[in-house]
Length: 237
Image (cartoon, rainbow, N blue to C red; front, side, top):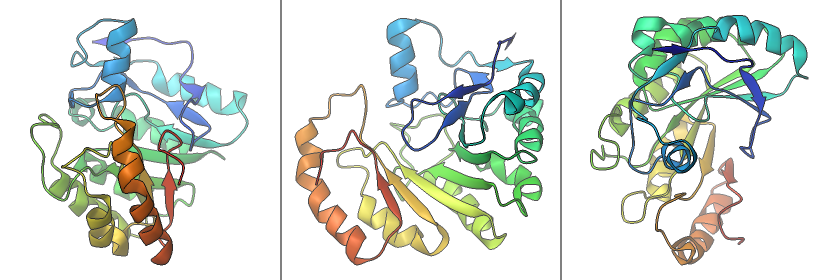
């Protein structure tokens, strides 16, 4: 299915980027903790796994990059640009071809190793970073039943680094008793440039969990000179 929109690049509500760019509506990965799925369900009940492509996305992005001042674009914030439908449409690649030849800085965030298909396009550009959501060093099918496992994502990260592509990891959400941020960072730090850490949203996780565990993690991050960003919803340390 396809939909049409009036704009593709929009000012972002995500604190570490200026704009977002969502080329699909819905997400086949359907992760149980997904804030986008849970938030959308509150305001616009629908089948989240019924993915729709923005059929005029390339036309819109060409226009939008002339409309907005250059900044950082999250690609994507409310969906995954490399979910299974992308293997058929190639829409992410088409939009990236426009963005990478613009003055904008592109932050690709995905859970799929399918992005490696486009490393030939991405490498050599200085205005792009490839990021993966990593929630564990192991696969966690209960939480991420339909997404490629963490192990595949880690291999795709290594490949990006080997090609000279700048990388980042989003340790978000930090799932109690599942996600161990220090262990993830220790394992990946040799091929990841920056780590972003955030909490679970729209789930019943007490803020006290993060308040208890964050001080020791923050101290370790500073002592080990890790390039990191803590999301603002986490308790102040």
